[in-house]
Image (cartoon, rainbow, N blue to C red):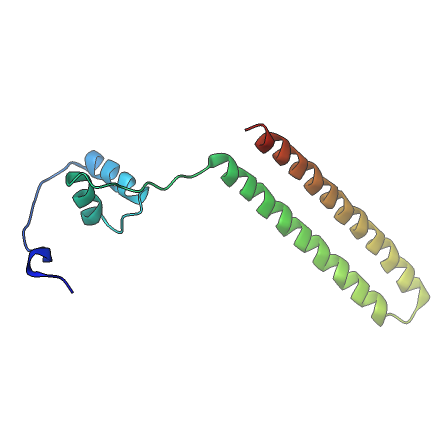
Length: 130
């Protein structure tokens, strides 16, 4: 519970222009503060402000990995559908066609897996130098 001295009943009002407001809002958003009031109190009372740090290279790597994951999922789904279809076929000419399609999917899948390996090696080399 808050004591009598902890209740915030005093107002401090000041005006800023749009550019200043945008800058303050960006500083607030990059901190762990829950709002502009909390951020402003911390700055004005010279309390520590915890700033969130974003690693741009990690964000770029994450975006590439998400794209590769989505491609692998799509290829894997196609491959699973082809195998399922093979199990339901009962005529030999159809099976041969699906086997060829399955082989193409397999090659595409293996190519993407190799690309992931190469990218992971690049990431390791870059991060191990730091």
